[in-house]
Amino acid sequence: METETGKKTRGKLFKQTKQLVRMALNDGWTQSQIADKCRTKQSVVSAWNSGAKNGNEERLRPLLELYGHKIRRNSFKLYWSWSEEENKQFYRVEGKVVFSHAFCEARRYHHQLVKKIPVQKLVVHFQGNNAFRVVVQSRIKGTEQNGNRFEFENCDESASWYSVVHEQTDVAGLLEFIDEYRKTRLKDHVVDQFILPFLIRKELLNHGFDVDGIEEYPAAW
Image 1 (cartoon, rainbow, N blue to C red):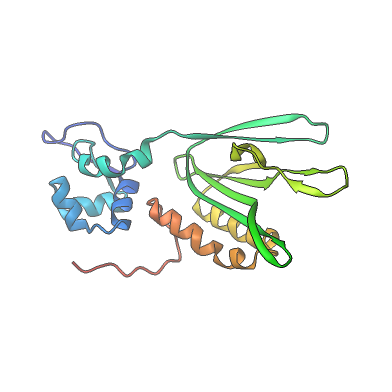
Image 2 (image 1 turned 90 degrees about the vertical axis):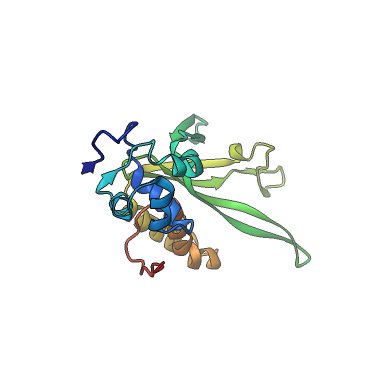
C-alpha cells in the first residue's frame, strides 16, 4: 500500500482513511468536494477511497472533525449469561456497534394491541482489521407461581438479556451468519425475516464498509 510522503505531508497517517472517505461519500459528498475540502487532488481522494493510499491526519482534518468520533471511539458493551447451575458469565465486547436490531412480539388484550415487547436482538461490533463480532440476545423470562411465563423488564434494559457471543468474522461471513439467523430464528417474525438483509447492508455501507453484490450508480458531478 502506498502512503503519502514528502515535505508537504504533516502529521501521522490515518490508518482508517478508506473507511473515513466512504462515510463521507455515503453521506452525499462527491470525491471532488472531498478533494476541495481537504485541499488535495481528486486522484488522491480516489486512492484513499480504493484503499491504495492513506492520508495524513492534518490533510484529513475536515473529515475527521465531522466523522472521526464515529471511528475513533473505543467503546465496549457488557453482556452476560448463565448456566442451569446459575453460574453467571460476563463478557466485555469492545468495538463500536455498527448494527443493532430488536425483534418484537405483540402483547394484546381482547384483541387490542397493548404494547410490543422486544424478545430477540442482534448486535454487531466492529473490532478493527475487517473483523466483526455478533452477539445474539434473548430476553430473560421468569416463571410466576401460577406457571405463567413473563419477560424481565428493568430500568437498565441491558441487564434484561441473555447473550451468546460469537467468534469474529469478516463482512462475507457476517452476511452469511445474518442470512442463516433469519432463516432459522425468525420464523415468527415474517417482516423482520424479509427485511433483515437490507438493514444489515444499509448499516455496513453507512459505516463505510465494502459490501459485495450491490449495484452502484454513482453521481456524475
